[in-house]
Image (tube, rainbow, N blue to C red; front, side, top):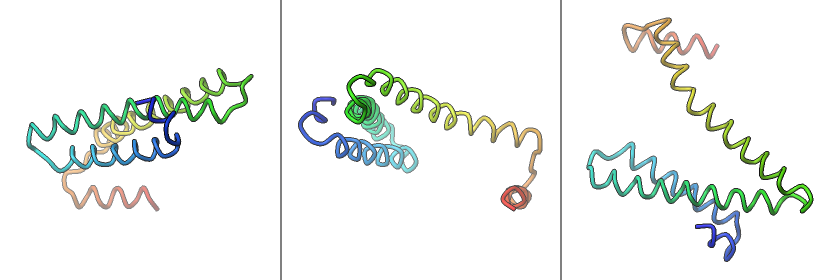
Length: 117
């Protein structure tokens, strides 16, 4: 998918990738049909490939030539760090519920409201 970012703007390719990401996750949330889930996985794979290629291309074009390798390194570091945080949040949520279990949705609502205040 990297060839697309050479033909049209990298920003537009990234926006299209995020649109595919939204459609894929909506598909995961809304369907139980195995065939549709398989199609959604293919869409998600297209998003990942497009995001990686176009994101690196955009990062390299925003940095001066002599700092390009470092710019791509920082880009990959930030992407990896945000993915680590995003993937660890469900684990933290599960640990929190294990430490302070809630026996009902009402208790959970009260507990989560107390966290926000």
